[in-house]
Image 1 (cartoon, rainbow, N blue to C red):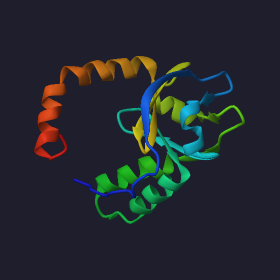
Image 2: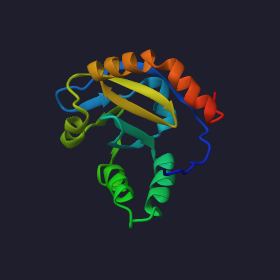
Image 3: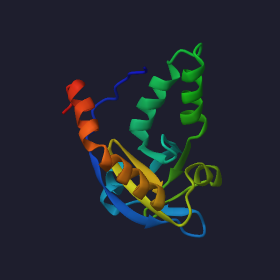
Length: 155
């Protein structure tokens, strides 16, 4: 198992927001987060077929950690490739929109309607139907998840 810790963020992204990708492949990020995200963000392949969005400072810290991971193990190489090669830096326009390239839209199965979820130091972008299924599955297992978190001393 791979463990690394990022420096503590001075912001916290929380909540879920319904948005849409326009015909020009632009997505408006929630206005509540824009100041803390900064003008340039990094969008990359995430886990569970969603996209991760990082403020540039957080991305640099994560990329530095990923860059020092051992390349001798295939699963490590795969994960680093997924995250770094799949990343794109993009500037937010005056309306808080970012461009989502085709390869990332395809990876996450994004159509028009999406959910932007705040997850502490990053945002996740999900197809709205996939998000609903994911949430329903997770909600069915809250007791089991709480027990596992308890074993880790988190909950």
